[in-house]
Image: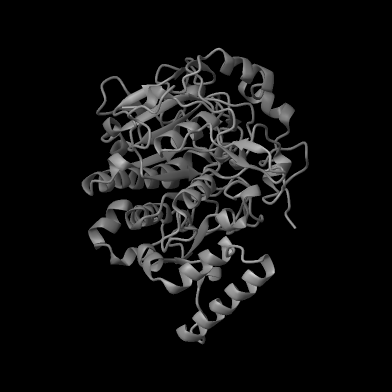
Length: 496
């Protein structure tokens, strides 16, 4: 059974909604749904009327998802002229794109900003940990859904849609390297809370869930505390994991050594015959097809084996789990995977985990979060570029929401809380413009000033670049046509 931390009236850090309204002094906690829809309606429909040159530019996508949500002020939308209670302890630095500044603890990323597009005007009405809202076409969201990964109301994950449509197009339900892979492990499975919703196939069927890796490797560094009252310390591999850790298939994808290959194939043949009889000659179950493909091929295991990389390459990505996961994602794409998701996930404790910096905001950013990101992200872009893969690989850095413009000074180390009215997403490769900034926010980074972009627009744009018409529908459990990107529009502003 899944548990929800806190009461229905409190946030993940124990703050009541009323208390949080007073923290920023910025009006409502989040956009109301009518206000959000009005904001969206003010924008023209930017979906291309024909398949322009950007359509299908990307052969694969790597989605980097920092769970808990990074602060826009200390990353891609700093406000150097804002008051101290907005700007905070960290300043901004120039980048290699004239006039564009980012957070001062991202100096390596500053040198690759000419390879990315930053969207500073992402917005939606739900300032909660809505992974499912961010990565699927589902039109509305409630916190209840986030604790129910298999709830029938969910819509399919973007990676599951890509897998499903490619299986239909190609007639190959189970390639040797899965099209849809999740790293470094099942989301939220290494915390004290059971797994969250989001990266699941919903009504497409569990056979189109991501194929999950597992990671065998101990953390090498104690992570800064999540909360003031935290008594247990965690050797978090996202803080440091060394280079001895290894990725592997999760336990469901391992062939036990006591089953000889001949016997295994005999079992498959028997299962195929039984399936044919049961279904009157119907097709073989996709989930079982994937399992057999993984068990009988070394291609997936080889792609997961980052120890095959030169030590200099591994060090370039950083001796952290996020860094090594990014390297593994590049290997998977190179081996033929279509959609790889890397979660910067919680470890040990769920409350305020990963990037959810309600407490200890500055120590966690300085000692843990920003340094690891600043190593891995540019390493991935430059590695893909050096191998001739960046032009055909879409890379997306996005999360559930942003964080409050006004700093809460009460917690130790200060805090920024949930904020979905304005935040940043970064895209690169696969047809994305070079060195561009799309949209802007007001002088405190609290509201969108122009070009509002929704998470559904990000999905629609990704589908378009991957050669999938974002107007495509898939049948839900009642066989009703469901749009793969919800009401999302392709954002032509990000195209190169």
